Image (cartoon, rainbow, N blue to C red; front, side, top):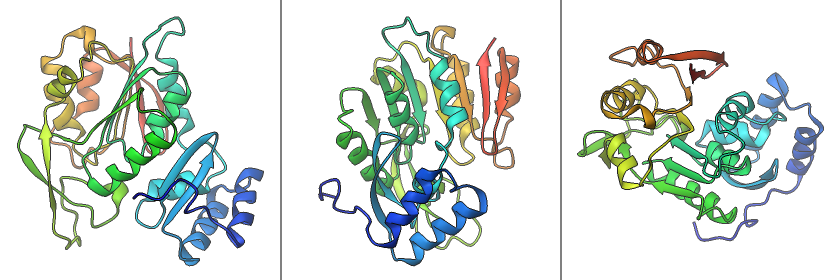
Amino acid sequence: MSEQFGYYKPGGVTVFLEFLRKLGISRGAVRRQIQKIWKNRGYEIVDATIHGIKYRLNIRDNTTDGKILTTSKFYDFQEIDALAQAADTSQLDKVFLDIGANTGHYSLSLAQRGFTKIIAIEPNPPTLELLSFNVKINNLDPVISIVPLCIGDGTKVPFYSGKGLGTASVFKEDGDDSPPIYVESETLINILKNQNITKIDALKIDIEGFEDRALFPFFDEAPKSLWPTCIVIEPNSTSWEKDILSRLETLGYVRTGKTRGNVILNRA
C-alpha cells in the first residue's frame, strides 16, 4: 500500500458524516447507521485523522476500523486510559505490549499518551500492512516495534480471516470456507527476550480465543519483574482450554474494570 496518506481521504456526503461524528452524536444506533452509509457509498480504505492520530483504515473488512472511524467517543477509551495510568508518571521508560495489535489503535493511542517503548504483535499480513503504515505516518517507528508473529510454539500455524480482518484467528469459525494462511509463531517469552524487554507496564491481549494459550506459558516461566502492572483482555471463555482470568486472580491480579468487550485487571 504505497499511496501517501490522504490518497483515500473521503469526500462528498461522507464529509457530513465526519461532521456528525465530531459533533458528538455518532453513538449507538446512529453510529451504526453512519457506518452503513459509509459502506453503501463503496468505501473500503479510508484515510482519516481522529483525535490527533492519523489512520489508514479498512472499514469494509475490519469491524474495529469501522468503529474507530465512525464513533464520536474515543474508541475503547476506558481500556486505554487504564493502561495509560499503569505507568508511573515519573518513569522515563514506559512499556506497552500490544498482543493482537490489529491496525494499531491501542499502540498509537498509548504512544500519544507518552509510552516510550511499544511492542505491537500482529501476524495477519493485510492487517500488518495497515499497522506498519499507521506507525510510519505518525512518525512512531522509534517508539513502536512491530513483531509479525503469532503467539505459539515456534512452528507455522494456520490463520483464518474469512469473517473479517479484525477477527482473524488460529481458530476456524463455523461457515468460514476461506483457506488459511500460514504464519510464523513464537512463544511470548521468547518475543520479549528478542526485543530486550525487561518490564511491562501495560499489556493488551485480543487474539480471538487464544489468550489462555499465550498467557499460561508466559506466567509459568516469566519472573515477577516481567509481569504487567495492568492487563486488558478480551474474555473468550468459550474458546479457552483453561480459565486465564481465574489464573490471573490467583497470581494477585484484581479486576478493576469491565467494558462491553474487555476485562481490566491490575496487580494488587
